[in-house]
Structure formats: C-alpha cells, structure tokens
Image (cartoon, rainbow, N blue to C red):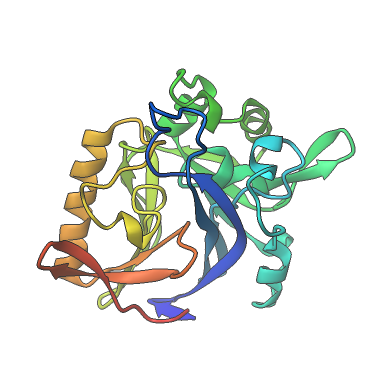
Length: 271
C-alpha cells in the first residue's frame, strides 16, 4: 500500500496475456510468425475520502470476443484481487477509464445470458469526451481496438460521465491528456505536497517504454508519442514522480532516472 495525501493506492494484477510484438514478418519469409510479448494487466485502486476508485478494468472474462481470449494466459482475477483489500466489485464508487480500447474496458461487463451486465453497478464511469467520440466513430487505423458492443453498453449506463481536457476529478486526483496512442487518452495523477504517482496508461505501459524513441504498433501518431513521453519523463525525473505501469509483467511502478543513454527506471515503493 502506498499513501498519497488522504488516499491509499493499491496495484491489482488481474491478468496476463501475450501480444504480437517485434519487427514485421520478414520479406524473405512473410509466413514467419512475429514474436509474442508477455504483458500483464494491472489496475490502480485508489481508496480514500469515502471513494473507492478503480482505474481501468482490463480485458475481463472475455465472453464477448475471441480476439483477446486467444491471447490470455491466465484467468481474469478481479474479484480475488479486490478481496485482498476487503472489497467487492459493487463497492467501487468510481471507474476512471484511461481510454476505451477493449483491453482496458472489457472487465466493466460480464455475460448474463444473452446480454452484458455491468460488473460495477454503483460506480460512476469517467471518460474523456474526445476519446468517447473517437470510440463511437473510429477510423480504419483504430477500428479493431474499439468494440462497438462495449461502447454502446457504456452509452446506456446512467452513471456515465465525460470530462474534457486536463481536469481535477477529486481533491488530489487529476488527469492529463495524451493524444499519441489514441485521441483523448487520460493519464491519472495522484499528488500531495511530497509524492506524485502518474498512471502511464498506454503512453508508458511498461519500463521497456522508457526510451523516448520507443513506440508501439497501436500508437496512432508516433511523433506525438515521442514528444509526450519526452515531456513526461523529463518532468517525472526532475520531480521524483512514480510511474504506474498498466502492462508491465515484472514491475508495477518505478521512478525515472537519467542514465548515460537516456531515461531509465529507478526504484519505487511497493504497494
């Protein structure tokens, strides 16, 4: 557990999966499969001031798509992870979604016969307006990353709220905007006078993404990613921020140090 201001922060590791990575197939042998990268799904749980806030949900129980089911290497462990902190899904008061790509929101629903049922029935869902508009009408580049069925389910929730731009959600908790991975991604930041933790979402999803020159195949605008990462890593290094990683299979968080060849991960408290 990490305490920042009035909040207690917890890292929930709810799933592991494989994702295509590395270089494109060789022109000499285009049938050669691409290497697969081991990734995790980590959720940030923030508890305090009468709120129990969950940042993202992960893929979920996978009942609605085979695309992610084929990649999962462990069951979805949300309930088990929440139970470690004396909570159940119904205790979550707010669900803050960094963006609406399927691997970040699928766990918000489960199968109930022939329909999807909200997993967090009493939680207010908070999404960036720009990302919601993108998800409703994705272009060809992002069409596979957004799931039309899930977006429609969110649209029908009574406790669904959009916010615009850099925004204070609650005292000590705000979001900053990143547009390189997808338009309107929001990075959740928890701060007090001494400590700041920033959720890296899919801008800095693992320690392997510390090099400012490294982008992912799902980024829609590589140049913007490079600029955004450079600015955030610079500020995090100067101010001693802790970065939280939503997909790192080995570390849930790290600080930022300046090495001879660029930024490198530094130590971070366990929580």
